[in-house]
Length: 127
Image (tube, rainbow, N blue to C red; front, side):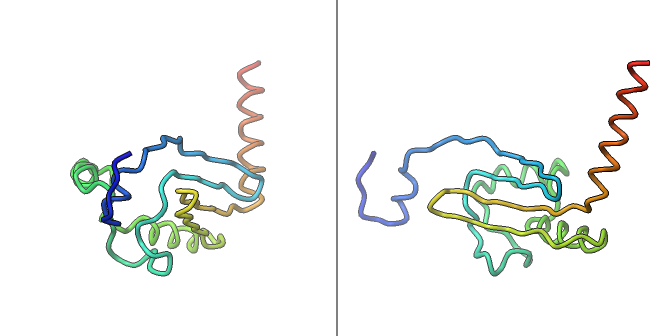
């Protein structure tokens, strides 16, 4: 590792640890664990604007219409949860663990309905 006294550069030379995004489904919620803490202060999540790790990739995704307006995702998730009568998502960022977690809450009946539909489809396929 390169030695440096500049605190800004210290983050640049840390060894990179690659971790997959994890999606964990519970009966009443979905938790998404993403490597990398939020660059934006937690109190300002959901406000317009972004702090980007890689502006070049963000620009390409925006041009391809794979990403909306920069910084609109959290507001959109909260708006859609409200419209569906669900609790607002919870967000947690941990710089020490280098992790960002989103918890999306579900209606209890939502999973039951989806499981019944899957079971019906499975039974129809089996004849």
